[in-house]
Image (cartoon, rainbow, N blue to C red; front, side, top):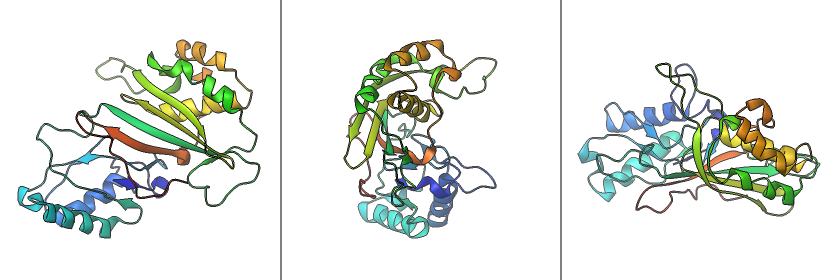
Amino acid sequence: MAYDGSGFHGFAANRGVRTVAGVLTHALERYVRHRVDLTCAGRTDRGVHARGQVVTFDVAADLVAGEAERTRLVRAVNRMCGPEVAVRDAAVVAADFDARFSAVARRYRYRIWNRPEPDPFWAGWAWHVERPLDLSTLRLACDPLIGEHDFATFCRRPAPVDGREASLVRRVTEAVWSDDGDGRLRFEIEASAFCHQMVRSIVGTLVAVGLGRMTPGDVRPAMAARDRSRAGDLAPPHGLTLLTVRYPGWSSVTSGVRPQM
């Protein structure tokens, strides 16, 4: 599924506020006429978008028995949720498949509009950074991120569970900047999993490097310090998109709902 996160208080259901899970669950329950409990591949924050989010839920078998039934399900839900939320496809999976725990990798994209003047057509999908960013230093600063590290510097630390601190060790397999021309910069990062606000904190730190406020050499010791105060400012949420999710034996699940800008 894909969604424009601008009008939602994040993905996860939250009583009293509008969320992606709340809207989707309501639509599914109206169609299937029984309770639905959603599990998602990645809980996106308020204002964050998705092109390739994956959710799993249990449903009465007769409602998804064949391709025609699944197509009707998708169309019905999209009529209720679109255009902000769009279900691209529905499939029956094994009973032990879980959108979150079966995933082996997630990939996020962050867009930056790097020109002095704003662009109204990019305002909801990219961070407007007025001063020129040095692309070569942005790319150099990505090197320390690759591999398995403790990313506490770039994560909002969760509350302890049963007195134990959660591990913030993650394995990053790719982190790359691309110049799409005309001031359009694109950062993509893939990892086995991400902790809360990790991508936005990394982007804010890399932008500080690109503006000359930090150097590429500052990134590794900042990460080793496991101290949030050593990171750059948190990048705004509207530039971030959950792009793809990968599962064993599957090609990455991605969305073609919204054209790339």
